[in-house]
View 1 (cartoon, helix red, strand yellow):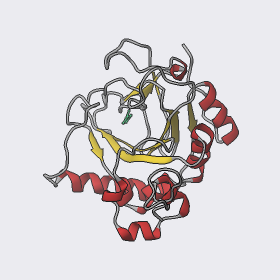
View 2: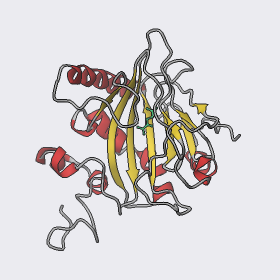
View 3: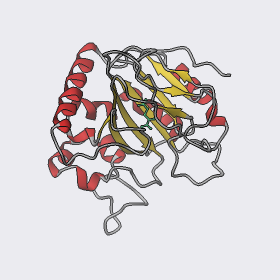
Length: 261
Ligand SMILES: O=C(O)CCC(=O)C(=O)O
């Protein structure tokens, strides 16, 4: 079985890891201050959603409602906007997908003691098989807490991008590796990689991940940005972010033949 690649802060090496293993791990991708702000905002939003009966509970890939998803992080705090357009993330996006690319979604996933493991899947679930040799998406997981042996670290199969198809069932029996990484790390994997949320066996440790998912520009986004973001947000967005949100576009998604912005 292919091991995980060694963590690296060298972006060229990280790109090679993505090509060879389908995954790369970059420690210290967030500064201490960035991590503290994002973590504070994440747990603040978790609390808010817990008090809000309108929030959708549960998610297709999750076996129960214990672990908690946080939707549309862009609208919740600037620290998540920063992650979506972070230069390291976009360097990897350009390497794997080319440019322009789209931000399909940016959500959070919190495992809590007792939450079970998620369903095995690959993220380009919307691409009909047979898949081509090039990935259609990239997930960039930002670790806001340490990912440990016990607290539900993401589990994945390095090299499974070469299999070029989805797992046939959510509980398929395959050897998986836990991604153990300190808070502040970035774990990126391309969309053909088989993976799942780990089971949180810890006594009292939660595990927060921020999960921006990017795709090639020919796919509809998971989040409907035109409805979920307000005008003020769009007025203040950078050109790169406007491209990622399909507000700056050519060929597709036009308004009377012009880019929306
Ligand atoms: O939270 C995790 O560890 C992985 C989440 C995941 O697999 C997903 O949302 O597609």
